[in-house]
Length: 387
Ligand code: NAD
Ligand code: MG
Image (cartoon, rainbow, N blue to C red):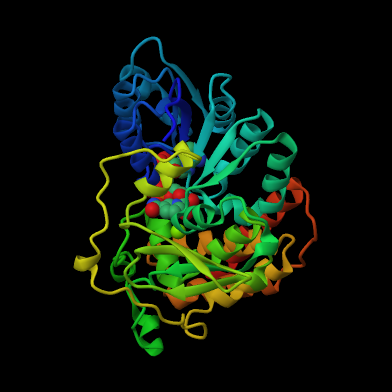
């Protein structure tokens, strides 16, 4: 455990969400390692104001400009406030920032992530959507600038810990674990009638609504397969999934000698967030250790590929590449939003995604503009399919 001279200065984008709040718990837990210097949220003015005050942060961003006036009345005079995407980019490129943690749900984190890389900052990425959409562009920009993309998603953080910068040629398979979600054991013919409330009841993790629905359809695991493909430069054929209901083994790497390394901890996102911040150091914290006698058993089972089509759709999107992953992601976002408004049935989520994907002509090695264009087209198509 090395003792750094000063804490890492971190900007948190999406600070009022589930990951954002966990990031701030980490900052409270290891203040000698993490200093928060910028905070951004969508529209939750009260929470953002409270966070700015608690961490004495002087730079804030409220994405929705409607909240700006109210926010101004709730904060100290010496805090500089920004709004909109330009505001997110402003925070992502603060000269004093060492790292930008991106915990914005959806694709709004993409431009700020690229701007942070361009400005030479390491990024810690929770927002899997941006790696799914533009993984090739994000990773190549990071390589060019010599900055790190540190994974916060628990599976990818686990793989990152197991790999320790080993070459992809040493790896035979990345094995992502999946809890299986609330419908792991539900017969396929009953999936058509599940409710929003049932889908939001995740067995092991407390998370935002979008990712919780994704965990129920298994699109979350599908997105993570593509995320892993780019983060670790491993083609889709070597990215595998196993269901592990206890969510204690966060993922594994099988090496070419058939030896497997796994990373384990209790299911708390503070673990991967802390490691992304302190890497390559390990530092003590107040998180609970594992009690193996209490756990008693860890189970593994094959995913139900046929009953949860999200996995195969993601596999296809990841293998074909180009703009197809962005299209899958966008159609899924639209469909999940409609399911959360109780406008469509649960299976209609993957049916919408499948139809949107099959109507798309993918562009290989797309530019950022082409990716954003494909994203917009897919949103329009999915919306049309739903209405
Ligand atoms: P959440 O819904 O709880 O929070 C979303 C956050 O994003 C909020 O702070 C919101 O204000 C912010 N936000 C949304 N749009 C924004 C915009 N345009 N500008 C600025 N801020 C904006 O979501 P979450 O569960 O914390 O997930 C965040 C991301 O992390 C998602 O991409 C998710 O897939 C990923 N992730 C989450 C978990 C988890 O345990 N929650 C685990 C792994 C990965
Ligand atoms: Mg995950």
